[in-house]
Image (tube, rainbow over all chains, first blue to last red; front, side, top):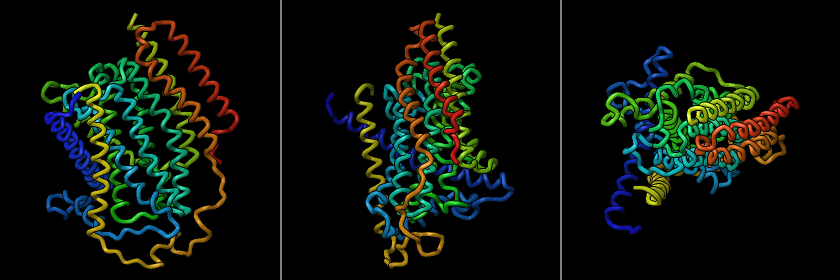
Length: 324
Length: 120
């Protein structure tokens, strides 16, 4: 393996593609959330910025955040406090690099892609914990303790549901799982699909699982002391998390690029299915109240984990029966 | 692109992410005002003066969840190599899986019966 010009150019090109996706898709989801939530609640949402239906609202927000003063409280652990938004953000960028839109449209097709993407997105949680603990603020500390407990509880069903679909395909490669997908998996893997989406929602701390941020109790939880761009980067990482969760759900459970004209329209099918999952994620925010902390833990340990284990058993039996 | 070269891409993407964060913070530093004052850098506590510090004794309610998670997470890691070979191992591995899931389920039921999974 030598580093020649062609390889370098390809590396730069692929990295740029990932960066572009990372900087646009979360904003698209954010804008969709503004508009979809607004219409579900019988209002218009942003209408002025940019002229046409407020399309530039998030760009305007970004420019505003960029000009806000950056305040680090005296009591905060300044180094960790400053670094935390980066730790929350970068893992989702890395996760997006390995998620395929189709077997040809993937920036880095790593062998054990499923394991890699789960490991990478789990690092993002550290950003929240760092933010909460380094702030030297009681709201932030309480919020990050809730976050830690929640993420411990929901990581497990997430991993078990992912293991189920990996077993069905017999591989840990994301492209391999997508290729092996059949339409009847929609029924066979349905419990795993539900467990995966619910646990994923909890991982990105979206309503109804936003107990750590709980604005009516903890101000903004771990983000209480953050201002300006650092706060905006935490918001961006939340939406990047939604994109990663939706894209993974689409590839693992909804067949990704499978659909009419999969040869030419494959990547569009994956994007479409990703968008559908993202809209469901937004819908759940509008429709469900926040869970209380003990209900949240009970749902994970007494609800999702047993379902995921049962799904694992079902998958194994079907795989063995079909194999013999 | 395959094999180790894919990890080169991953490395460049990580580098790009670090650069993105550093660049964004640099741009913000150039654009934002910086007017320091003692009041501004006080700890926020809903508008009243902060009582004590962020460092205080409190009850960590989730340590039992953390224990549970550790046990389960180690099991889950061992699952991943196994799921790729289930097809080849056949019926015998279903028995093994039964033992594995049974042990986990008994542990979970025990934890629930002992009231460990109550936050309060």
